[in-house]
Image 1 (cartoon, rainbow, N blue to C red):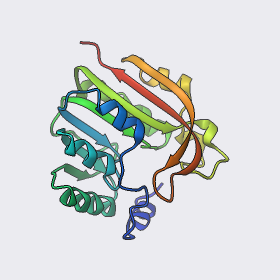
Image 2: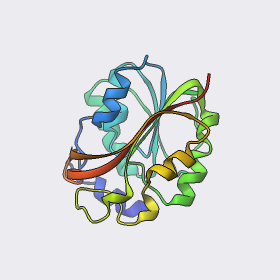
Image 3: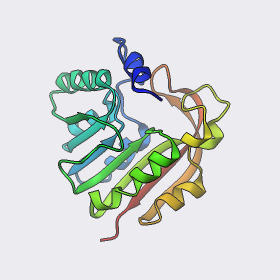
Length: 200
């Protein structure tokens, strides 16, 4: 989707995906010692700010200027700091790598861009560092609870295993859930959830 679409969507006062963190992310962070984390396509910042309140040093990016404004507003309200860049998947260069965790929460883009980006993650992660991911699965097509309407932007178990074959996959599951993450993530949904780590 184009930058103008996301800038328009994020330009309203309401946090359209809510201000609470993604539940799967919050569950995983509770088990990890805080360190440096990268949040990919972070939008309005709810997940990055949550991590920062738990002691993580956070770097994030998105290509929406309006998303960054709302993330910085949310960070100020929670009295935390995050390093948020406005850039694209192709142009992003991490400042604080290597990371202890890289977070991929509903960061949907076309398959070519996604595969090229995911191929860089191993170099950006510390030995023993984690990837935490939740994305809509291809079975989400036809539901109105959120997500892209093109299968090319969605994952299935086979594609996830292939794209993260350089990592040790600790948990990977396609699950039916009920989302309550603002007006655009609401209702029954099919998601892929993954925890993986780089070999020590």
